[in-house]
Length: 89
Ligand SMILES: [Zn+2]
Image 1 (tube, rainbow, N blue to C red):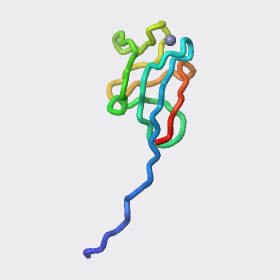
Image 2: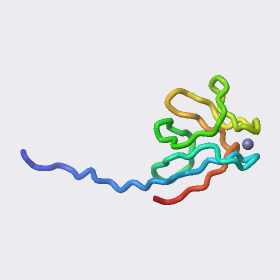
Image 3: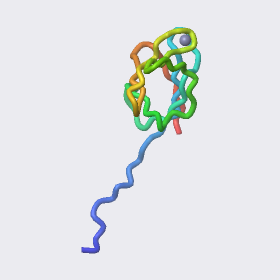
């Protein structure tokens, strides 16, 4: 043996996403997203800033719009309740 099998250096693309309320356009969450694709969940460990209100397991905007459901390790986002804008890192 002694051979290095496989090189796991993958190139990940990180995005600093701003998740905004679709209704009032307030920035609710700043989130580190890895890779492209639609955002379905927010892993709590990658949330940088959180301005949402928590009522039980409901995550809402201060304007009252329901943004998602707290499911423990992540927030399941309600599609169409938010918009995102991201910067490429
Ligand atoms: Zn709002």
